[in-house]
Length: 458
Image (tube, rainbow, N blue to C red):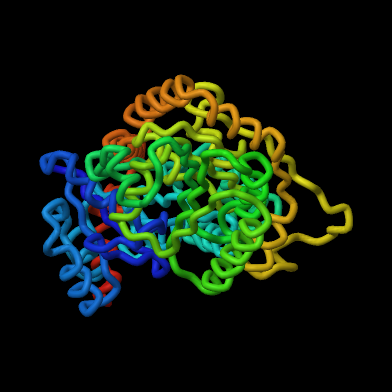
């Protein structure tokens, strides 16, 4: 019998693989993940995407019905899935997000099963992550359960949360496993144009060195873009270089942030001879043009939520050397002085802080406070930019190494293999079924139970 994988979507994750929101990491990743599951043999795995109601079920069916790479996924309601598989032992439940509690709830509803349940990581600096871990702990953790982490930084943070829950006296989740499986990129779906052609379409001279930042245009949830603008202005005044800042993904407040960045660029450009282009709400076509035209990828991440970095991997697929901060999940992606450079960061502690952040900050306030404490070594960042600006051979060598690393370590195939290995290992080592132990009763015991429950006495 094939392993049945039940896929659960968190309410915060928008599932529409036909039109994933450009540069929205979790949506793009979910789309890639679901399509990548088609690589697994139908003889070994079957997949069911579970909906909470018939109406949602029809909506999901409509969203994926025209996707050739999603025909392997059956869409059904939770109730119908439980009615069909409640007695099966070859089931694992995978949450498409950190909501492992949703997976545990489904197992609880199945009653007596030993289905291993799994979560995955994305934005981890959110009080909801800990709250859901506590709910999971109350639903009966199993040793084969796991949250699959995209990076060592994500695993370290999840272990921190688990330890905090354990020491607080709340239901322990200390047996929860945290294997690392890096996010993967479908490199075959990333079209690449000749650099000169891409530059002609963008109006960029052939001899200009293009630095590209591609990600959320946010001062709270992504990178120190104001620091990057200042660094570029100091180092490349009057030089044949351009900094392209490009991004997308909509959320509350982004319009005001983009306007602030635009005004900052206009102010600096008026005082100095520098060239900075800003592209917001980037389409897939423009994203291809920008990546194809660039020489160097830059990402001064300073957000606690950056647990991986899909944009870095995509840049490596375009053979771009990467200059990034030595921060969070980035350290698992870039090999310093091989595929690019990692620049030091420092955390500025606040001695006046006496209470835990979860009681003091809203999510937005936490993000603002956190980025204000991350100090980037801008002297080193600028020096690395100048070094690669002047050294074409090193740019090409780093780009070639980056492409090789991306194909080996950050492919969809590697990601799906990591997940399938985790699922099969969990089933191999799962506990004996509670239901199976119940039916080990002797016939005398069963007969006596029937007599009692039917109101008769022997």
